[in-house]
Image 1 (tube, rainbow, N blue to C red):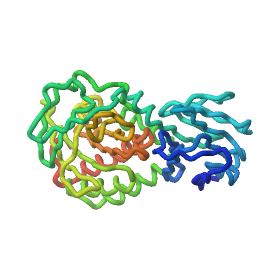
Image 2 (image 1 turned 30 degrees about the horizontal axis):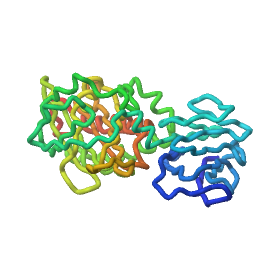
Image 3 (image 1 turned 90 degrees about the horizontal axis):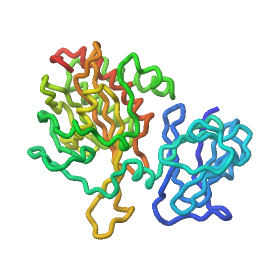
Image 4 (image 1 turned 60 degrees about the vertical axis):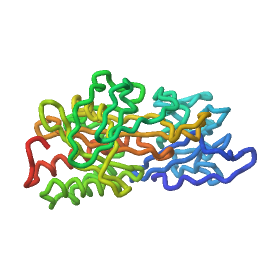
Length: 358
């Protein structure tokens, strides 16, 4: 039996709802790849099978009152409530009250959740209150050594010179997930939530199977990505044009009608260079204020996945971004995009107007 419902909580005795925006939440992806995000907006959250629990997990192996998550100041703690099948934190069964950190995996019996914390993301990325530098298509930033905030607004057809900042490397602390994208390395990626991943592969194959034009492939693939990734805001396809590592924007779009995209060139260059799929995150200020506030922060998540030819050579990349505080990308999303990108690469290789490379 699958987890069917995670109920919104009703305030009970001793459970006080906070007025401000939740500083943390849980995310679950079930076997049908339905994302459930649960804000931790009370001082004590009870997780269990019983209907009166704040978070109801309808699964026989979960105890009636299985575990609790408590908030003390800005910290969150996990404690098992003598459940029959136990609670695990990052694969280890817990026997006492444990501090939660951003990105921790929690298992109530066999049901998996990921813990996300606004403060934890700030500590993980080390970016703090950063005001983003927006670089127009005609300009470059020659005076910054922070590759994590290098952005360029680019349109379809733009050629982009290699960034000098990729040599300084992206901040490793901001990389949430990274793994090789070659076909022979996909088994571990496919294993988790395999049925739902297979379903999306089949749906994408069906959408692309009759298309023989590259532009139409990109448009159809972008449309399916919006369906598969509800939190996606923008997507861009780029290809490496020559041995000097210049890249060209061959498709850019998103939920807001526009033909431009905000590209992170160092991230794309590293993805193409190493043929690795990357999930990158940082916190940025939405606006400049005299006194920095938590409400000024915006979490930015970027997935970048290489497009690989049949011989394993990387000819380009797909970048996808989102800045939704409660629906950010995670490692499972990166796994899905990596697998789906192989389908897109196959479709591109069979286009009538295929060019050298992608």
